[in-house]
Image 1 (cartoon, rainbow, N blue to C red):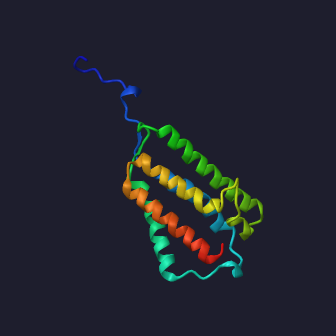
Image 2: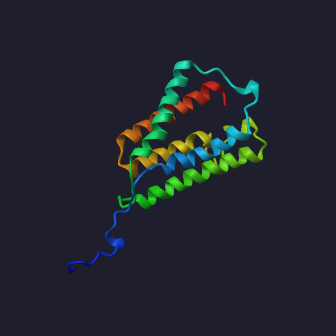
Image 3: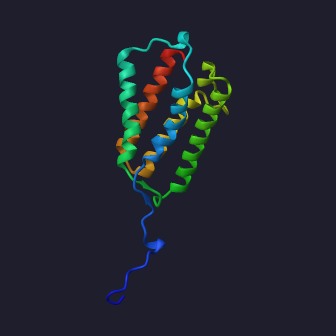
Length: 162
């Protein structure tokens, strides 16, 4: 290259990493925002959850949803296509389960009803998505936060009866 020439953008030399995993919690929270705005649980359906369990679940949820903002997603990592397919499948199951809930007039029974032989898809699908995303983020911390959130989320659901 001679002096004064600018180097042209070449896609093959660019890194294939998304600068932030922020899209993951955003996609997970979209149906929750709709639920908060337009639906409410029937008053008699909430079970009592021990405060310590509820606090632990919320801390783990916060960690699992906040950490992706600080990690890039590496799409060049070995197996990234398979992981992305798994993530897309988990997100699709999650959205179908939410769609079923919304179309069912917000029936609480649909929150934990099985879908495609998956028990409690609204609890398991986001956890699967977060666990898979930890691979693309190359983050054991994210994996641990997602795993803790999954275990605690399922514990809260079983204690509350939802």
